[in-house]
Image (cartoon, rainbow, N blue to C red; front, side, top):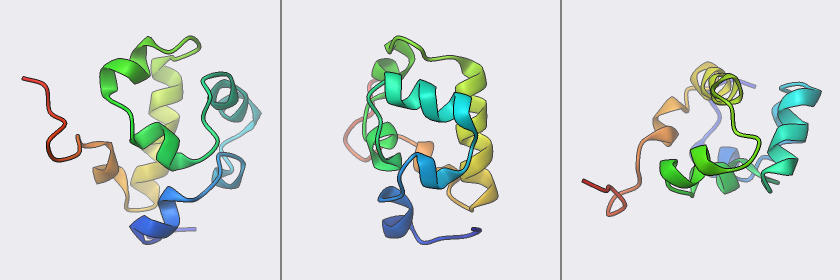
Length: 82
């Protein structure tokens, strides 16, 4: 599935992302059921979750990039911490 629209992408379940068992299991352990669950938290919260690894983040980033959605990792307006 490439270049899906943002609304459709946010509602996709982790299992539908087809990223493999390890990614799905880690996501479940961190409490994520849908892609929006990952994208709607602050980066500081994400990296402090038990089970987070940069390998997991790399898989997520590659998936988003492949689907034309990498921009979704950018901070949401009004949520930047400077």
